[in-house]
Amino acid sequence: MTPDRGELEDWDRRHVWHAFTQMAEYEPLLIERAAGCTLFDIDGRAYVDGVSSLWCNLHGHRHPQLDAALREQLGKIAHTTSLGTSNSTTIELARRLTELAPAGLEHVFFSDNGATAVEVALKMAFQYWRQCPEPRPDKNLYVALGDAYHGDTLGSVSVGGVARFHQMFAPLLFDVRRVAAPNPYRPPAGLAPESLCAHALVELEQLLEREHERIAALVIEPLVQCAAGMIMHPPGYLRGVRALTAQYDVLLIADEVAVGFGRTGKMFACEHEDVAPDFLCLAKGLTAGYLPAAATLTTDRIWNAFLGDHASGRQFFHGHTYGGNPMACAVALASLDIFEQEQTLARLPEKIAHLAARLSRLGEHPNVGDIRQRGLIAGIELVAARKSKTPFPASERRGWRICQRARELGVLLRPLGDVLVVMPPLSVSLEEIDRIVDAIEI
Ligand SMILES: *Cc1c(COP(=O)(O)O)cnc(C)c1O
Image 1 (cartoon, protein in one colour):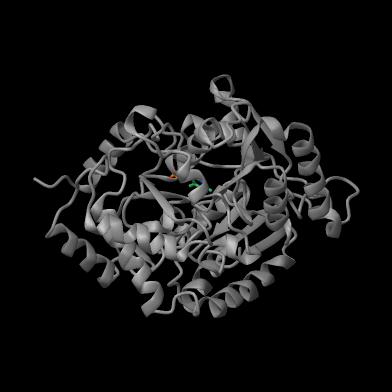
Image 2 (cartoon, rainbow, N blue to C red):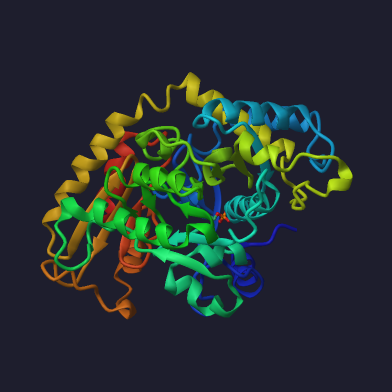
């Protein structure tokens, strides 16, 4: 017998432990189906998917081509292992990703989520310095940015810097050198906005000058630190970080788990500043929001250091059981086809401009401190006092309350503290953008 709504809510409260959620206060919202950018709950109520089902969905839900790709793959095989054997769908996706990615990223290691994509890059970098032609085993430290978020496994938490998420686990984490994130809305006291980029790069250069012989890699979320509250770096920062890491022989890990696949207006955020990293981490949008999958791309330089005969023990001792899963790869391939057929990227500028125009009207509100946008990623920072940029007391949960209100108006959003997040699917219509902004225009 199918359980009724009351039973489902009861079982949800009792048995399902939801991520980043206080279960004592949890109120179920049961999403049952979707079409395009609209989600429907169990009672048939419609909600615009304003955050792409947590930054994953690209072309809308139930896209006929994505659904068909999964059915077709299902007719062949659902899963086989990538440990030592292969599959035609997985191979095809690896090839497509290397063609799309910034220059030099020729090799793809598949895993199943964003945290593992970063974890893989961290461990590859570490092992690389032990096996490269002139080994540098002292290079075993990492540099990460303040307020960074790279996922929730212990390696990715170590490079993470969001105190609210990560402080609790500090005793379990490895040592990381941290540089301040250049935050145009909250720059260091007395610093002119136009000096922010140079200032941040000087801080990084001083660190690298001092410790480069011990630093294996730097990890960065290119252009936008999403989970930190949509901190958007000044232009030139990413390019500067690439130049400095190259100069000091520190590997660059670009975590494009959130910003990859069109969110910033280009396929990958690194393209905005002509940057080719040593590692590119992809997840969330990789499968257009359909299935868990991730990829870590890297260069010949790294790959070559892992080659040798079996007895040399140089292989990468790391793996995830479902990495390279054919169903996930099939839907990822179909998503890349849609980018071409629907000209997804070419259709973004109009949507990006429309979102900007609509959001600018919110700027008049006395409690809107900052509106920032990069492509179809937007953050609206709420403050108690605009001039002093004083935050509201966290206990007031202003961001959460506005999202609760938006939910009543048929728009599903999830805030980051007091930063309202708007990150709709790339297939969002101008009318749906209007509905999202209307729902937060209090
Ligand atoms: C979401 C996110 C991750 C973690 O991805 P999961 O699939 O949740 O493990 C890592 N890095 C960034 C930048 C993210 O936004």
